[in-house]
Image (cartoon, rainbow, N blue to C red; front, side, top):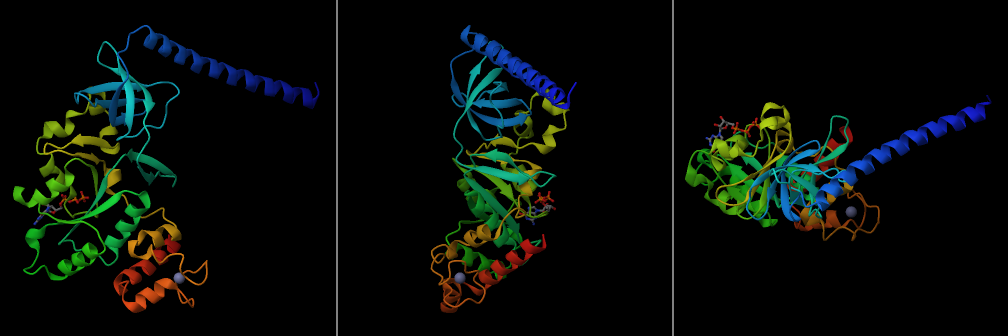
Length: 337
Ligand SMILES: Nc1nc2c(ncn2[C@@H]2O[C@H](COP(=O)(O)OP(=O)(O)OP(=O)(O)O)[C@@H](O)[C@H]2O)c(=O)[nH]1
Ligand SMILES: [Zn+2]
């Protein structure tokens, strides 16, 4: 047998395997389509993914907020917590997801191999929690803001542990005024008392939020207060997921008793800056945006170039020294990473 013939035969085998695989997938789709057509499922209704475990997902019906264990139609993939979907209910209360709605946005995180993976979708705001103690190190808030800006999701600053704040607000008070002047919402909170969360409750109403922030700032304490009923916190879990290890890793959507929704997972809490490039960092500084494109050189890197619009704004005092230094430091740290 000639070499060429052999390779043709190999090709034929591969094609045969692929055809068989496609046929199997078609068959499954056909079975599903048949079941759907036979009226074994109810009408198409909207829902939201509140957790997912591979090809099995928990979906909350939008009309009555009931939870349903659903599986995916064969041709649908890559759903994440927070996705809005169209699904159909089976007689036993389970369901099949038939379509995914457009996403307003998606939060991504690098997997262990460094590849970006979506973890949650349709988030209205990223609550960046920091605290009086441990005090945020220089640039920390800017780092989070830049990372949040890159997702297109609105960042909100939450200063926790205000019970530990010195009279007059101290240095942190000044810092916050600076961010408020840039247009960021700043919420003051303390997990020490129920009244300490009033501003936070108001901000969470009617929105889907995630909490991020450095270790020890009180994210767990705040979330425990917001979801006081433990049953509520695990209420969404079905039998198998409670037994499995998924609970600690996958993102989950919780309805807050005071209104609003929270998507939470250890991975989301650690959301940071790892995967940004220089342009994203530059655009992540909101006060730079109107200046970008006005430098004399199109490829200006805003270091010491003549006619740099950013440096001119810095000289005029329109851009704060602290923020500009922070910008430089963040770029430096990207190079080292
Ligand atoms: N004084 C004071 N202490 C607080 C407040 N919120 C949380 N703490 C304390 O701060 C410590 C850290 O709180 P956690 O809720 O575990 O912080 P975390 O952000 O979830 O930390 P990680 O789980 O490491 O990410 C705990 O000892 C809390 O009791 C607050 O508002 N005021
Ligand atoms: Zn420039």
